[in-house]
Image 1 (cartoon, rainbow, N blue to C red):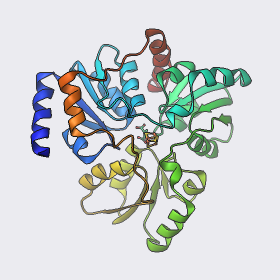
Image 2 (cartoon, rainbow, N blue to C red; image 1 turned 45 degrees about the horizontal axis):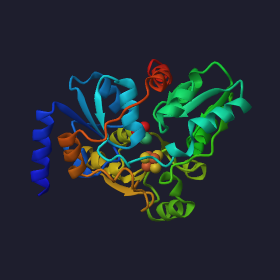
Image 3 (cartoon, helix red, strand yellow; image 1 turned 90 degrees about the vertical axis):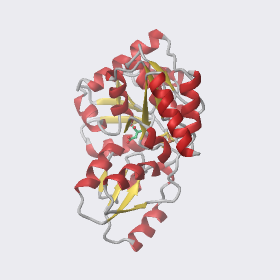
Length: 301
Ligand code: CIZ
Ligand code: SF4
């Protein structure tokens, strides 16, 4: 059944001259049929450079939007229209416009987990993989960071010479990791290194051995000699980790590390998207150009 669906997708993909991109947090079957797997930035850069005209972006809405902003001539399809990111929805362009008035001198940095409208209101974008580099590149010492307060706190702990004011958004998945989870892990796996995503709360990050984005965690795991490793990010990352490191055992820092939005996309949805061209991402051109500027400023660093 699953094999039939996979063959159908591969056939449709050829027929429609499409490429399938899957985020590191997607379900295993979707990652299996993808042409490229990665974080939102890597996938968006791929979207800019692929020869295919149609991109099926298996992830959440802000990711497909980012691809469309960077590759406006491509047809970008998000297989499930309702796959959103609650953190991205915690800041709107209207709220941001109002708040900017209270911080007239601040450079506005938006985390990639934000809508196209919010990117358009921001000066520069960042991802969890380049947040420190982006912040350090800014001339001004006053920064307004939206929407993730946990990533902002982590940056603040690493870059002391800037005044960073932050929005109070958070990832509902990473924010769930608790100190109880940490104590349990430390007690049961006292020597295993703990690798966490910067969307986790500061009290968790403080006790981690490594903090990084999905791409950085994947890279770090390859370098580690340890046979048991604790992972503090969305569980979809285990697909690549296990595949690349068959001799290592991975233990999730919490058993609540599944993002329902990332899990909405099934093989059936990918097939429907390809077959019927559904959920095509469209962005108003004025917004797109402004959002493009904040993304390009990041990419050109
Ligand atoms: O930028 C991404 O893809 C996200 C949301 C997470 C990560 O660390 O890769
Ligand atoms: Fe949004 Fe968190 Fe889900 Fe990523 S894991 S899509 S930040 S809710």
